[in-house]
Length: 143
Image (tube, rainbow, N blue to C red; front, side, top):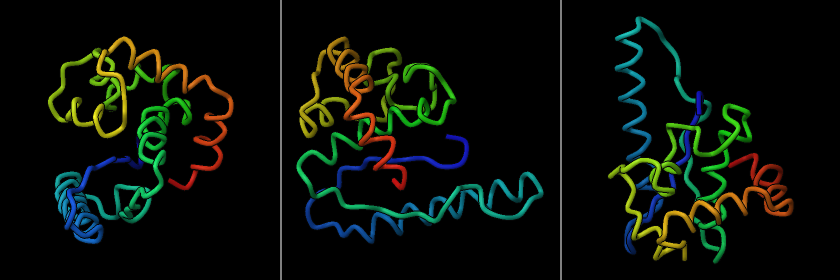
């Protein structure tokens, strides 16, 4: 996304939500400072301050996972999820062989199909489901 990004991070038991949020905030501040020096500019690079939300409800992690992949389409940056090159969707659907995402862990934790073609079909079916689309695109605008 041009002015923000979403991360869905699995945090092991015993690690506080605040520690994760603070670590990401430090990374973003350092990145912003470096870009500002390089480009001789000032100000923030991202839309809003770092915030994290612990996903406690059973289905919330999988809904957020799909919302993240659908976000560039919602913003009208691309027509299809697979067209956004800055998303992990391309890795999960088998269009790119990235190593940043742990595909097996995501499939295990979120009950996603390990077959890439099945994953792609599920993602597009969810994307085209009117009830889910309403949930993602209207109720989740603040995510």
